[in-house]
Length: 138
Image (cartoon, rainbow, N blue to C red; front, top):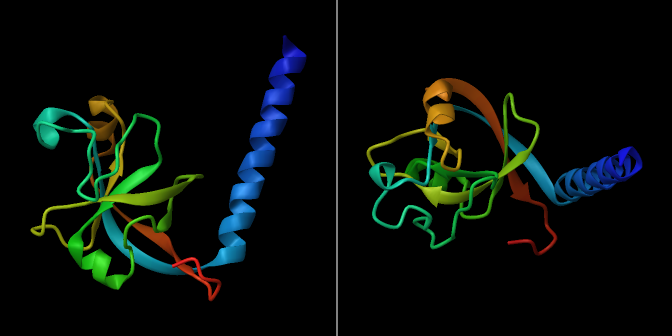
C-alpha cells in the first residue's frame, strides 16, 4: 500500500512539474494588486444554476477557478487566463466574471464549502496573470 501511495505522489509531482513548465514556457506574467474574496456554487450566492459560469463553463468542487471583475477583463484577465494568486501554490484559471459593481477584484472558487469562503473573507493581495507569448495560444 505504501509503495502505491509513493508512486501516486511521484506521478502527481511529475504532472505538477509539467504544468508549471507549460505555463513558464508559454506565458509571460503581469503582476497586479487586487482585492480577493471567495465564492461558492450555491443558489443563494449565484442563481438557480450555480454550477454554470457567466462564460458558460460548468464548475465542480475542486476546480481551481476564479471570477474576475469586468474591469480586469479589459486589463487582460479574459476567459481561461491562468492566474497565480499570492499564498496559493496552484495556478487558477479565469472561468467566471463578476457583477459590474465590483472593481479590481477576483473571487476565488471554493466549491460548496461556504465556511471556507467565509473564513477566507476579503484580502488585498498580489496576483500574476499569464499573457500568451507569441506562439499562437490566443
